[in-house]
Length: 211
Image 1 (tube, rainbow, N blue to C red):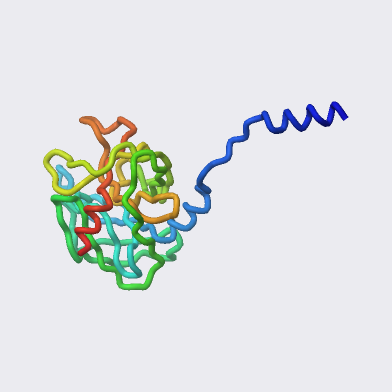
Image 2: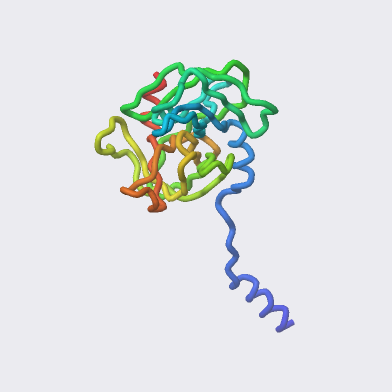
């Protein structure tokens, strides 16, 4: 009887780590609304190159992404492909605002999409989906470090998260614990970009852009 008592006590004393979010479930759901975008352009040597970035369906035929992805590339030939799409398809720019680094694309088909969430707070958990360094539809997680601030030289509001991004992640979505979109990843913070802190367009600016 005494052994059973102490066994029960030890069971309650041993800490058990339980994640507050099922990242697998969230990633599978948000991946359905995520897309990889490709454009062609000319490099410094005049050679034609292919550029990739990320985006998120916010309705069944509209993709939200970062405006700077199209700088120096042929915006008339943009191809999109989701992780479950059998082939790529052409999309076109419907609206673009470089001051807040947002672009809205029009797609020719009905596609699964994600909803916009509520304004995030410091400490909220966040999930990023993008295609960094050509690794398609990669998922990273972190927390919101700062939100609702102005970035020097740009308009609108931005937030900083600890969810890692790299080249190719631009335009990808930042999602909350409900799988809702709360930001659009834009670029890394710091002069060289390797600081482990990512900058995203804040939800307030996204809503104003979509009006």
